[in-house]
Length: 182
Image (cartoon, rainbow, N blue to C red):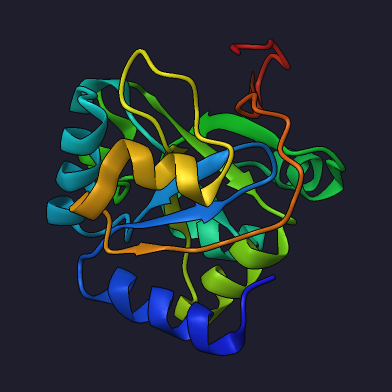
């Protein structure tokens, strides 16, 4: 578990267009401020991932995601009631940055229950980018050390965690159809 000091350090880095590696429900992730095109581009370069694929944003609660999404009350309730770590493809709002949704008409979002993610999003009072901590073609990192092995000094801060990871990124579902994308 992260100390309050570590969470505040990570929050400061995110606010200043930095990139962190952090634990999520399933794998280690790379994260940054979704409003910072500079930080998002750094993540894309680290992963050798094209911007048109889009990225996920995660939050401590649905309210933090609301500026980026356009959902019915029924769809909001569906997200609130979900007990698993599900990433939802939802209709994006007009202000959702194109470097987040890529060439897609929808945006990928998740309300996280992971304690580190919740504390971090609450510290900055907004969502963060979440993409698996791995270069294209490599297995997702499941530890701080594996993240460091992949990215070395390319990441500004590596948070630690003792959580057991599944090693598989979270399932992605379309909110309108319930169809499983991944």
